[in-house]
Each structure stands twice: as C-alpha cells, then as structure tokens.
Image (cartoon, rainbow over all chains, first blue to last red; front, side):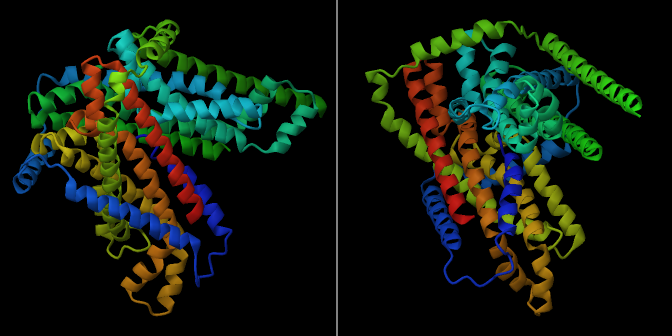
Length: 288
Length: 268
C-alpha cells in the first residue's frame, strides 16, 4: 500500500510542467518522450510475457480454483458471520488502529525535526544530503522486514511493531515534510532573517503556520498507510491486532464467513479515516 | 488606532495560542490512551533502538556460508521483480479500460460510470493482506496467488489514478475532437490515450516500485520469491543470510527507483 498516494502530489508537479509546454501543438515528427514511453512499455511487456509463461502455478487447476474463489467471495461478502467473537474482534481492530495512531504521532513528531534538517532552505547542504541518503536507504527496506528485525530483540508485540513501523513512517514523512518546507517563499525567510529572528522563531512563526494544512494531509495519508501496515504486521509477523485474526481464520480455520466479517470491519475503519481526512482538509482549505 | 490594533493582535495571538495548546493536549491525550491500551512503554524506545541497531550490525554481517546463497537470492529477487512488473502492467491495462468507461469525460452511460467507480474502490480499499488471505483459500501457496493479490490492488489503485488523469489532461481536447466529427473510438484511442500516455506511464512506474516492496510481504504469506527466503532464513536463525536478503532488496529497490526516475525525466 505504501506511498501510492504520494503520486497525486507528484502528478500536480507533472501537470504543471506539461501545461507550460504548449499543449496545443499536436504534430510531433520525432518525440523523445513518445519514444521513451514506448520503449518502457515494450520492456515491461517483455518482462510480463516471460513471467506469465514461466510462472509457477503449483499444479492448481485454474478453472476449479477460480470457481472456488468466486464461491468463497460469495460466502465472505454476502454471508459474513456475526457471532460471540464479535467483541474480541472489535478489540483487535482497536489494537490495530491504536498501533497506527501511535506510530503516526511518534513518526510525525520526529519527522518534523528530521524534515527541517532535510530541507535545503532551512539546513546546510551537507546535513540535508545526509538526511536524504539515510531516509532513502530506510525506505528501501520493506516495512515488514523492519518489524521483524526489531522483533528479534524486543519480542513480538506492540513495541516491536511500533518501532518497526516507525522506520518507514519517519522516512516517508521526512521526505514529504522537507519537500513542503522547501516550497516556502524564499522572500519570507529572507525578510525574517534580516530582522534578526532566530532559527526557531522562523520555524514556529513563519514556516509552521504556512505549511500546517499540507503537513496535516500528508500525516493523514500516512495514518492510512500505517493502518494497512499494522494489519500486515499482525498477519505476517504475528504481532497481534486484527491482522493476526485474519491470518488465523484465513490459513488455519479456513473460515470464509469470519474473514468476510473482518474485511467489512477494515473497510469501515478505512472509510472513517478517509472521511476524517477529507473533513480536515476542507476545513483548512476554507480557513486559508 | 494603534492600541486597538495591538489589542486585536493580542487577542488574535491569544486565541491562536489557546487553539494550539488544546490541539497539543488532545494529541497527547490520544497518545497516552492508545499507548496504555496496547501496553506500549514509550521509554523502551531509548533502550530498544540502540540495542537493536548494535545487534543488527553484529549479526547481519555476511559470512562465507551466506555468500554461497547469493545466487539463489538473486534468482528469487528476479522472480519478485517479474511478479511486480506483470501485476502492475496487466493491472494497468484493465485499469485503462475501466478508467475510460468510468471517467466523467469519456464514459457514455452514467450508471456504468458509477458502477465502475464502486468496483474499483472495492479492489483498492481491501488491504493487500486481506486479498492475499482470500486468494490463498483457493489458489494455495504459489506465484499465482501473489500475482493476483498485487494485480487486484494495482487495478483498484490505477483505475482511480487513470480516471483523474484522463479527466484532467483530456477534458478540453474532447470537445475539439467531437467538433471535427471523430467517432467515439477515434476520440478515445487517437486523442485521449496518447495525450495522457506520459502521465499514465508515470503512474505505472510508480506502481512497479511499490509492488516490489509489497511483493516481499505477499511472498511471506504465499511462500514465494524474496519474501519466502527472508521468512525461511529468519525462522531458522540464519541471520547472516537474512542480512544478504535485505541488502539485495535494498539494492534492487534503489536501482528501480533510479531507473524509473530516469525514465520519468525522459518522458516528461
């Protein structure tokens, strides 16, 4: 799930550069852009073809499997069971939500300061480059691996999950925050510096107020990602929460109906998150 | 006048301070309540992280035995990259058709537009892990299960992304094309798709990068690719090999990111 939504921001930049390139001209004798697009498409097509042919399907009868899959889907989504387990499942969902919230709050706090260090206009070149490199390396390791690495030392549970999830969370938010800081009008900073304002005065009186809405929307995007990751951690690392229930019902009890109930619960949480972040964003947009 | 202004300013800043403090208090409150609920000891961070990092540096050091596993790890990694690329590309093809049917500018039948949006949102919002679990029921532990899980989420996500791209980039051009008397299919495949092609490609590249990371997780559940190798060596305490697996993953993810940034610069 990670970082998918980041693109919506990138796309804005892309669109901005495109519109400045005279979109009205349709005749292109030879375009490097078109050639690169086609080449990239061809390479990916080749890889896909080879992969699909050589894929190991493990002797599964495809027709039977698809039929079984559709029946299971029907069980899950049309006949989810609601039984005495419900309170237990609700607690498990609450655990997963709590893990996501704790990770996000901790991550946002730390990333605010690392983001300041990483922003070119508020830091030195060397510091910002170092931060960028470290964060890129952290982001390259999948979240679940971070959790498992820390689980070796501090046992599986809330601590390992929160620390492991935080590595990715901090790296992601640092990148997002420092890009927002860099977008601040340089004139404002210069004006404040010339008045003799201290670094923290600049940060808290000028930088923070003007970027709060965007920082907030990034933080909420990360909360959604952290929730998905917290489920994954429960399922793949047994770190508790609803992910673990999902894993047990899915791979040990083969209880299609229970899996359906869990999936519905997750959908409700995701929709609530989306609703809150939408409301917050419109609230801030109206104010500013 | 000056004093009025000063008072207003003081009031304004006083109010802002109050709002800031109450927000801070609410956040601290949420933190404390959730931490108590999951039994999380905040101070443990200061001991766990340094201990974990020193342990990491001491135990993940490659040995001659772990060096021997490199070829197997690279082969597994190639499989994982193959899975990610195919799931993204095939997901993109389906997503393109769904986006054409569902977008406000190219869709022709309103109920079908709404249905497509709901259909895609269903695939997008069910977490990857849940898809993997559901698919494991019927498709068992193999590459196909992982591929399908990645394909489903990629399809859901790209449909939404493509829809927005088509609406933004091709909206105005459609009127012009209609005026020339072009047919619907001419408008879509000669006008809309080529115009949006570079943006669509950029999304697709992003999906590939993401899927490589997600494929690790899926691999753990479905017993395939690099995720399986990590899980296997992790559970048998061969941490020197685990170190190599992580190293290979980092190198491949960073390389992919660099390649796709390069391609993005070329096509933009």
